[in-house]
Each structure stands twice: as structure tokens, then as C-alpha cells.
Length: 145
Image (tube, rainbow, N blue to C red):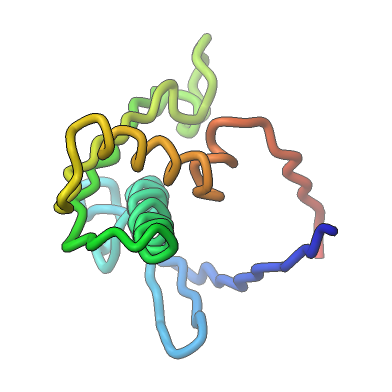
């Protein structure tokens, strides 16, 4: 039986590039670098996206390790993606606006063989909601409030 859970965030943009959200007890800011006419008060949305992917993989890694009784001392997760900024700047391009490719690399500190670490990472990525949403098509709806 399927149980659906909703995650919701409300964010505000005021007179600059700063986008602010209060999520629980955490005040988060997204901004642009000063060189891009922002104020540099926070990471860009694309950097947050990469961080969220790494965070989700790390979190699911911890869950999988606990479930499988693996002593996971830690993980380092590198996430990088390539995109053509022309689309978001309103310039003509044959590329899509989003990332053309996202690459994930993980160093896993656990007493597992190379093959076991590979299988562990494969399982983690298969269970990661952000990995799933990025890899597969997801309906995204938008409208005016």
C-alpha cells in the first residue's frame, strides 16, 4: 500500500537576487555571486541542487548502512553537472536549459570490498528520491497563486 508524503517549502524573492526560506528552524538563502549582480549571501540554486543531491545520497547511505548493519564511518560525495547557461539567460540555444549530465562520485569509508562498495552505492542511488527525480521524468506543474 502506498503512503504519500508531501514536502513543501515557501520561499520569497524581494528586491535583489536573494531568495529566502524559513524551513523549520533553518533560515536558508539562495543568491548569485557578486560578479553576476548578486550579493553573494548564499549558494546559487544550481549549487543547492548539487548539495541536495549529495545530501540525499549521504542520508540514504546512512539508512542503508544502518539497515544492513554496515559500519559506515563516513562518505564523501562529489556531485557535478554540466549545463549551458544560454537558456536561463534567454538566449537562443539548441541545448535544454537544465543539466546535460550529472556525475556522482562517492568515497565510502566502510569495511567493504570495492565490489561491495559499488553495490552499496548502486543501492543507495536507486533509493535516493533526488537521484530518482533527476534520472526519471517527473511531472512539474506551475501556476499563479
